[in-house]
Length: 225
Image 1: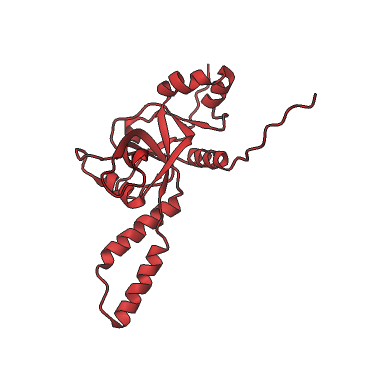
Image 2 (image 1 turned 30 degrees about the horizontal axis):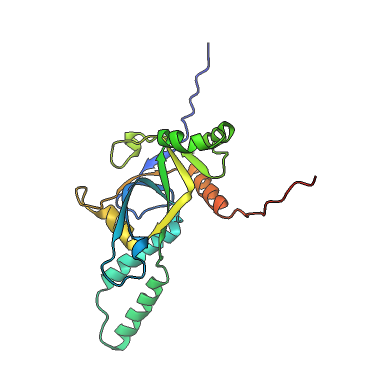
């Protein structure tokens, strides 16, 4: 008789919590990004913008940075207008300065695409051995993520297996990002929080991303003949 394991599999995803700030290695879908048309750089008026919507992105900024930023913005919003003078104004200024030290200029995000899409594009440009390495998270540039079940998805839909490309990353202002995930589902520009990687998969994805960013480029040298 074959033995049956009673050990539960290690959780991979957990559903996002809408009441909590965004977290490291949290999956967000439908994120819109607005950028200036490069052809109009330098114009003071009449410039065009480019709207890009990404099916999936992964938050790569660390939990502590994103959380402190979110809490600081809440504190500043609750503080209201500064008192006119006196000790109350001194204390208000102190708290305001303290809150501002915790603000971020941008949240680091990395693009993710469905594994089936990547297989039809990137995989065709890589030698088969390198794509096999990517599928087992041995290729330094790519990180494969398992599919998510509806129970692990804040939107109750689930999502397919994804591939994160560490070379395709960008930042978005924290306040804009927070507002987009807080928009009503039918509002233009609404982004949806989905799931968060569970330890140790969170640490594995984060460390691989930053290892790729910290790699050292060496000059090409001809082999000695």
